[in-house]
Image 1: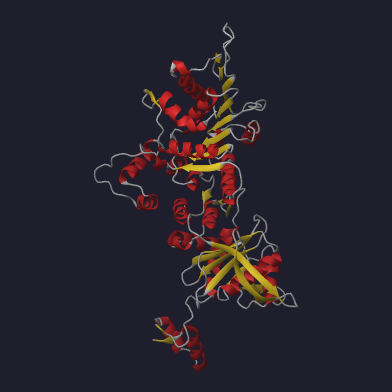
Image 2 (image 1 turned 90 degrees about the vertical axis):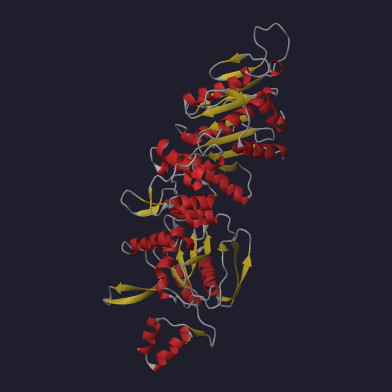
Amino acid sequence: MNLLNAKDYIQNFLKIRTKDGDVIPFTLNEPQQRLYDEIRRQWKAGKPVRIIILKARQMGFSTVTEAIIFFLTVTSMYAESMIVAHKDEATANLFRMSKRFYDLLPEPIKPMLRASNAQELVFDRPAKMKSNAQGLSSRIRCATAGGSGVGRSYTLKCLHLSEYAFWPGDKLDTFSGLVQAVPDRPGTLIIIESTANGYDEFKKQWDRSVENQRLGLDGFTPIFFAWFEMSEYRRKPLPGFQRTAEEEDLAQTFGLDDEQLAWRRWCIENNCGGDIDKFHQEYPCTPDEAFISTGRCAFDKHALVLRREQVRKDIWETGKFRIEYDYLEKIKSFRWEPEEGGPIRIRKHPEKGVPYVIGGDTAGTGSDKFVGQVLDNRTGEQVAVLHHQFGERMYAEQMYCLGKFYNTALIGIETNYSTYPEECLEWLGYRNLYVRERFDTYTGKLAQSFGFQTTPKSRPLIIDGLKDVAKYEIQNITDYETLGEMLVFVYDQNWKPQAESGEHDDLVMALAIAHQIRSQQSYQAEPEPGQCVEWTESMWEDYQNASPSEQQMLITKWGRPS
């Protein structure tokens, strides 16, 4: 069983039926070649081949997977292989594909066939054969998911799980039983492939694989194939073809040409019934686009998907603050230390004199991490993110250092679930905390308190503010993970915007708070001593209405007018 020779075997000896009904030699297309290269890389490295594929429709991954499994089965002794599809019709199609591979093989390389029925090909000496010739004792089984105990009694070397997102019944239970039938050894192969089907078990498996890959852990290698990787997905544009604004964004982000955009228009109208969300699911540009949320997203999903793709490869410095304490256990000094995988990620370091704000969200109900979102208050641009499962004291200390680091930024932390981080910042002596007004029921007067309260009145207000940012200034949202949470921030049945079930919204809420508190911080950088600046008309008006001492204070704050 030597996969390194598979491509030559496949292209020289196997035949496939085309969409036009013709039977032709199998030549790998570009996406199939990319999958084959990854399989070959893992095999050559002496690793068990484990791949999960998220794909657009009709790219030929079932075909190339069946071809590889066929090769590995008919060129090896005692090779047990299994193919599991989502419905009986698909199972029958995949079996016919394997049967066609066998029937059209050149006679000199055909292995003996003992049985061929609707479920399996058994490559062994026929029972009625009088010769003592030894067969392969190898087998390809085809089955439909959803049956009781599928694959549990077997020991397999090759396993293909086709259209996993569309399996009926308990997908996870069937999946667990099947993959455990394949030993975790070199020379074995498991391929999961599917188009997306909303937020289901396939998405969870995909997300786990992506996260494991990010952390450098063993597991399934995730591979995504966008629709535009297929060279045949193009059409000649009609006369007078003009790109829409959306199509221009796609062209700029993914390098698409007019023929590809013309095919996209045709496919939306003819294959997807004019439903753009259906097209995104069936023919995605990115994994985000594939996994259509089951709820109504509070933000423009298309804009978020494109923005996420634009920032996906941006490099952020990660690390945390190292702290030295005095005898009272207060912070005496601190320093920034880069650290791979650290809880704070920085896109832009602080600039001298620039005003910053930090919105914070504590780990309360519906969230499992503490968050700090840092904005350049001149523009609202996201420049750093704190995101980690701290204890409350450690969170407050890191926020203290983060705020000091960013020119004593204005900090506003949500206090709905815990006031401790805010109180800790006060105790540590942080001097630029967001102040809110509240009604004191004892005195009957308005009183000032530190920290941000999310209430039935303030919550819609801050979400609407963030929606405006996402609509008009999306370039200021620069963090890949924050944009990901925004994609699953949906309206529930009562039209309350919140994270979809099983997802989180801590990054979203902290960013919304950061934008809401900006008015309590300066919007202009502090000038260098003696620097002249150009004042606006309203600044001159404030200056002329001020007392002499107030005028001097304004000059100190704004800089001497030019």
